[in-house]
Amino acid sequence: MTAISNKFVPFMKHTFTTAKKWRPDLNWSAIHEVMSAYGIRLIILTCLSPVLTILPALAFKLAYDASSIIGYLLSILMLIPWLIVPALFIQHITSRSRFGRIASYIYAGILFATFILWILFIEF
Image 1: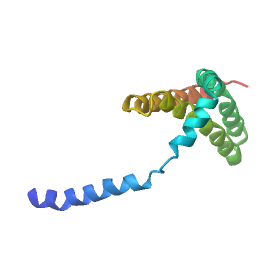
Image 2 (image 1 turned 90 degrees about the horizontal axis):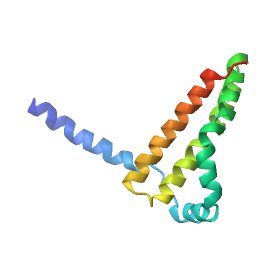
Image 3 (image 1 turned 180 degrees about the vertical axis):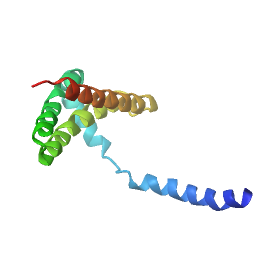
């Protein structure tokens, strides 16, 4: 067992330390300026995001009825800003703390869950 762990532990350490290099290094100062300039609008957008995810869900439902791959791609492209902008705003107001990251990931998960629920409950 020791021989196996001596072979795999260095491999795992190398794999997980190189995974950090793949993450993009964001320019947080530029994001901070935008978030500060549009603060009240982003608060309203963050509050309305679960309701407004009906737009990509509607595009997904229309693509599902027509079996259109371009419609699926359009709905995913429409969903990405609804997930990223509120998550970045939550990280901005919490100064990118550990709690802020966790809260933004949870909120993005809630938004994705509402997207799925909108898809299930939209009827034509």
